[in-house]
Length: 177
Image (cartoon, rainbow, N blue to C red):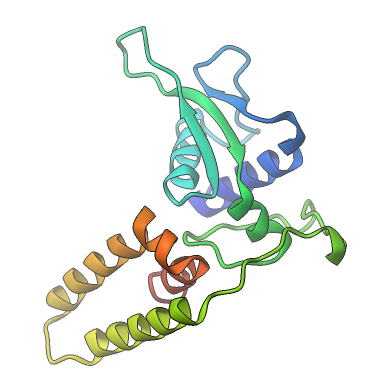
């Protein structure tokens, strides 16, 4: 099963169970098992990826077995809810099962914070930087190295704070999985 589908299943599950708060995953007691057709390894990798891209909040548990077992608690956060409810572009490819997709009346959707003029100017400037990199007289290797650095910057907490949703939209638009 594709990683994007596994991430979509996991995000939808956390969305559907968001009223329960944090849910155990991994090797924790009463951990949520992966649905049929998804291996435990892929399931836990999806947890890690959604956490890395800040679509869910993850609280790891210390592994006392010494075997490097991943365990912890996950819950969908506001950004993850906005991706599902309001169609905000996720920073990583996520395939949603449209048959299970939850439609929410407009009045109940999570509000999306509008970008400030400063955030818009910075986002537009970064668009120009990406275009310049793509058009530069450089080897593909050099272009990819520059874009990799930029992607790393856009995925940082600092970029999320400074640019808001602009950081995620740039990653989604220019840096496909």
